[in-house]
Image 1: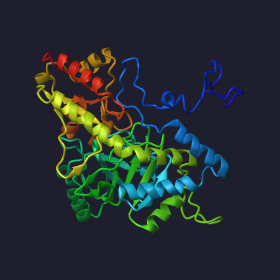
Image 2 (image 1 turned 90 degrees about the vertical axis):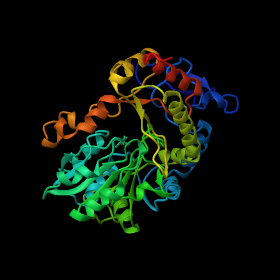
Image 3 (image 1 turned 180 degrees about the horizontal axis):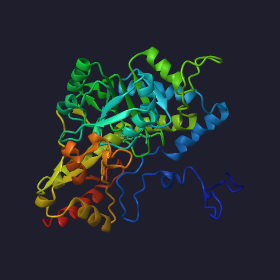
Image 4 (image 1 turned 180 degrees about the vertical axis):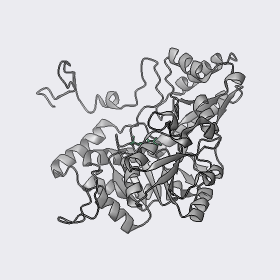
Length: 410
Ligand SMILES: *Cc1c(COP(=O)(O)O)cnc(C)c1O
């Protein structure tokens, strides 16, 4: 809230003293740019990419002038169009987060029964099945963490209706093999492509694989709208249905086509998203430089593995997972996680525990660790290292040194 001194009151909530600082757009521009290095030497696994505040401020002023703040306004339309162009996915529908489009995709395709899915993902993947009254059937993953097509067929029963796969860390699944199985058994395929923003294989967006694909624009993702997401449809008619579904099912003032939900992105986030879209190529290039430095700095460390770059794939470097073979490395993954934490380097164990190990799932027959040996091993070995556009190369070097020190090979 503006006060009389042209300041901004950043204090909210009872008991919190208001923080006031004077805003002079010219002079304080740098301080307000969220690119200033973290002064304390603390490095988190990620840091959201944010547009300069003054750019957002201009769009906010325009939104205030228009007085249209949600329900498919000016910025919503623009962002849908620009994202569709940027991603090469003409029929894209925006959502308020990346979980709702998975829920809506399952509703759209009217899936009932069992759905084959991966245990090696963020819980939203399997939760979306349960929220649709579906039974997740976990199938093991390959060495990159993606659903292994060779194991899908064995898990198919007469109740199987669909496959819900994830392009983990943005590495494309073997979409051709998955489609072949789906065609053979008459199954639908949905990709939770939350990690795969902008990823292409042989010049084609991976979002175009399967019957439907979903994206997340959460703050932790390569491209963010604070919270947000999208459902990638295959036709105009399909997108139109999704647009109705994300607005309670309204297909006109007095007509409801289906029991819909509220998943509409508001104008503020859409405007913010437009500004971040201008930066995303640069963000991905900066992530690529960090990934390259890690690869070079860690290549000779025994017992450490990373996921190689797949041929023909335009990667987005959304994560930099390493896998720690404790015996060869000399220290366990968890001990390395703690040693790095002691150096103020905060890594994350994505994905540990497996979804199949969480209480809502662990009693499913397919959740038995013996059924999921690769996923179990990856989840015990994985550590995602910090990677984000503003990560300083000196911090990357410090992280590499800390890992080498832990391995006793400095
Ligand atoms: C982030 C993520 C989601 C959920 O997205 P939200 O935008 O946080 O709802 C779903 N699946 C995967 C694999 C994710 O990483």
